[in-house]
Amino acid sequence: MSPIPTFGMLLTLVASFGWGGMDVTQKALTRRVDPLVVVLLLPLAEVPLLAIYAWCAGPGAVPARALPPMLGSALLNGVGLFCFMQALHRSPISLTIPLLSLTPVLTTLLGWVFRHQVPFPLQFAGIFLVVLGALVLGARSAQWHGLRSFAREPGVPLMLGAAVAWSCTPLMDQTAMARGAGVWYAPALTLCVGVFLNAFFLFTGRWRRLGGQVKALGQVPGLALAVGILGAAVIAVQIESLRYVPAGFNETVRRGLGMACAILTGRIFFKEAITRQMVLAVVILTLGVALVVGLR
Image (cartoon, rainbow, N blue to C red; front, side):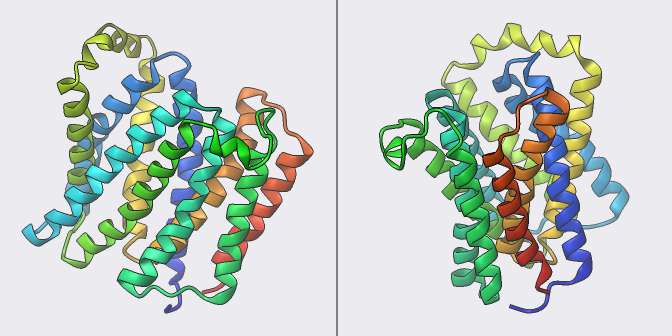
């Protein structure tokens, strides 16, 4: 793999910490508004903000040859989000969320096979530490009774499905960019994700049960606006970072820092307890990310 440019690494770090901030604001919002309403409306709210960014950034259309990977990415993003929501509904979060740590491994392997993005040996070690840290984080749960806990949980296959779907999307985004997609790719992709999700819930009749809950957004306009603005900013930086860095590198840093930030922000903003095992997980995750980022 060719050396990673400093600017690309900077964008990746900014996006990773941005996702951490997004988790905080989303969690605060979903305490007041049905989470499904947020999931369905957030992409559509982000599109105008991303369009303003693209218009200010200058020309950069999405050519026809970039549409197939863009639509594939949008569809898999929707599938991943649906599987993610179902998994959280059916099984404990502490047993399902750590499975998302598999996405850096899958993304790295897919990038190796399809885009010839071969990591350095120590970066493989860093990816291993990120996965290990996430599993240590999951093992803190009262529901943890060894690996058999995963086998009997109905949400595990769904979360694995989300991990596989989200492992493919960075590579599809990079393929679209390689085919000439410019800055308008971010709003176009986000619009497709929003349309796919809302069409699915509309055709299955689930939107009718949420209609009355949309009004709850009007009671927290400032928080809802903050989530939309931060979400659009993070998406823009995340997609731009994929122009400069391998998808596996991007996903490893994002997941590693994201899980570490989740623990710290949970303590700072929501007074959640931090155990020794959680501290160990943060140390392992940080070392893993440091190995991946440190090799350029």
